[in-house]
Image (cartoon, rainbow, N blue to C red; front, side):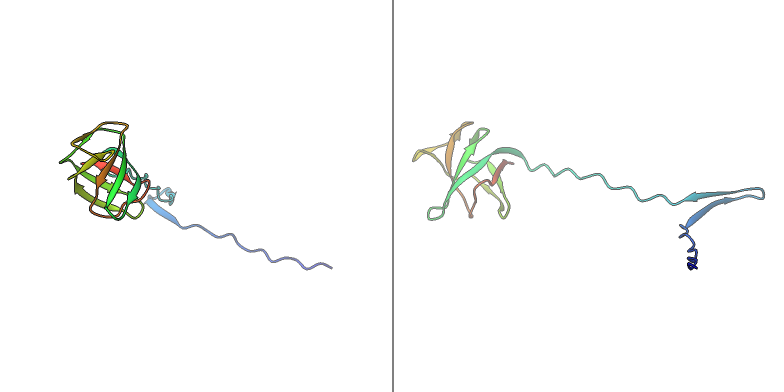
Length: 124
């Protein structure tokens, strides 16, 4: 003769009593917490371009421009391991010193610190 399985009681969720009256009780189940909306990243400035190459001996990064840039502007260079702000002191286009860079040009930019390929450059 097979053995009877013992009946296991169901787990009871905690319930919160909101209001008691003489005639009836209102019971409300606890609701799960709402998920927070994803945060938008803080605005870093206007994107100016992307670093395509770096020459370590002369501390120059090659910058492919997506917007105009001039000597004296302040830029933020941000990448996976790179994050610094500097003022533009010197720019060159094919070994000729320039003061303004136009959209689409690849310019040489004197940088304070090491930069890497695909680092983003923002104008502050």
